[in-house]
Length: 450
Image 1 (cartoon, rainbow, N blue to C red):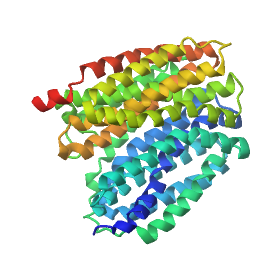
Image 2 (tube, rainbow, N blue to C red):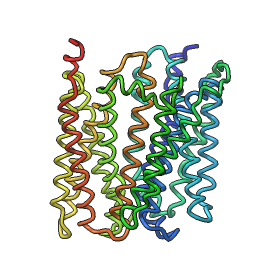
Image 3 (tube, one colour):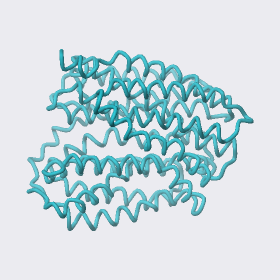
Image 4 (cartoon, helix red, strand yellow):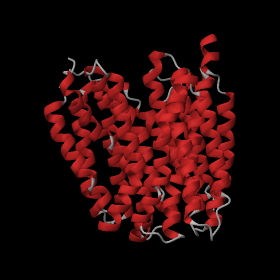
């Protein structure tokens, strides 16, 4: 049943209010880390788990929730996701200890990960006219909430302390829940087949990622070789198990068959590793080294976020004219230049110079995000778009997780400009990889000819 034209905007608004919760909560935490470190007496490496656990739970939760949405009906899953986010947002401010707060973050990630696949399912099913416009609008909800999360978080934390970044969810949840009950259509559900969900594969994936994070965080002090063993054992078990599954969590065999797409995922992981080092690193640097308040930190972070939002339409036009490769090379080059410029930052450098560097890095993100997504769709078959999109999101989460681990190593004991330079030097290596992969990517014309 298609939605009537005049009700389409209400339908999209309802889903948009839900889908913005995941990017909003993943980004607001960047300004809250310093306050939470003091509240729970944490090292930065400990606090970095607040980032990692959210992305691990999102990576594991989103594909599961997509299949549950098909089985139970997307409207039911959408409402259930909102309730899970509400539950976590209510409990988090009363956290008696850090593990409890981590559990709340994981629950929030699972709940908010439910909203995107169920919302997308309803858009594809019920909007026939202007579906592309509806999807573009939802993308704006997500990208805007992620971009301005640190600024929103900064104002909230300075006024009402860190619990406010959880409480702020309630107006969105309440509005989305009430509107969803009356506006979203009930869909027929499929046969319930929990066997379609690769629970063992997901458990092995989580086991592997946690082993990797524990090993990486130990590099700063006493190396945990047992954690490396967990990672290697988990990775080998995951590969052996997944290649035998009919509906695997990650289709590793298809990745082997399409090396171009595999390299696109590797490139996107690297881009996100670099970008999120700055996205989560700059707020901590501004607060702990330059002693800016949370509100001012949030305002300064607008340089990083705002530049990306402003440049994205230009990147879109370039993609329409030339395909993904050219803007991707531009974005990769700007990311490399921005990271190199960061090495010129000194203790006595002006705030204006830092803002200029942040704006350059933000511009790279405006090019890279939309170019990477287009590059992926240029190199996968139309029938594989859904699974490819899922892996694309997983690549984003993996880059974010690795960035939090890198920051945990670099910022753990002491934070100053030199430690920020250390992060930039490591990021330069990944920037070089991104540039090389952008140059070697087959162009759209080459792909069509082939």
